[in-house]
Length: 95
Image: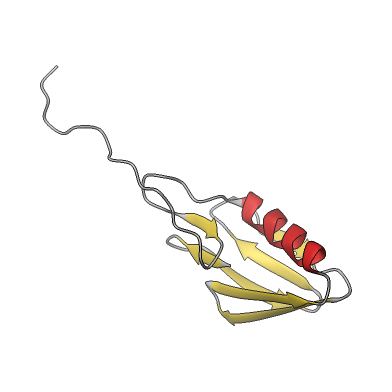
């Protein structure tokens, strides 16, 4: 998983992942038994385990905290995921 956004980061504390995602509070996610979690740097998380479904569910639960938004791409995305970007409002169109 990759975290994009100014001030968005993650750290590992015991068996919990602690996220700063622009909310007024930190978000904690407990890591279930059977899943290894490696925080390579504050914006990159790797999940491993022998049960593919549990790993996928945990990854989906983490991504759901702050899914990537289509305008700037800020949020949590899967490493191989491609985010479709939208154009913003047309600038100087009168009105």
